[in-house]
Length: 136
Image 1 (tube, rainbow, N blue to C red):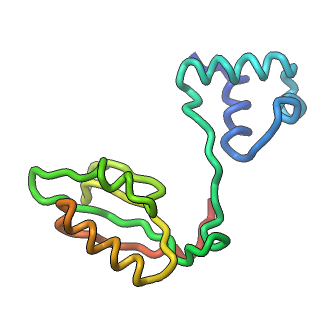
Image 2: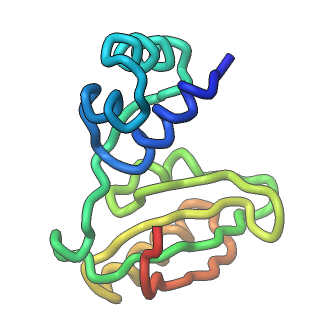
């Protein structure tokens, strides 16, 4: 069960990189307790891992997109799509689309090649949204 102290710790971990000492100072929870709670949440799968958030523009990816995918009836290629290098996030969803993909590309030509590749992976229809500004 997640406690209020755990929620405070998770809020900080989610928002930025912080040491155990910094989390302790921000929450008023002793360092040892913060450390033990984080380890416990990792063991229990509450915290699944850590990752770097990359500034795509600084590595030459000028175009970020969010794409709604509709697969051919009875087909699915989500696992294969999730392994493509440009794909940052991949979700099976309910609603108008079968899946949502977030990806980044150097240029429009690279994006177009990606969209062509999707047709080979049972994708029947796509709706591509170019990210104009990341807010969070």
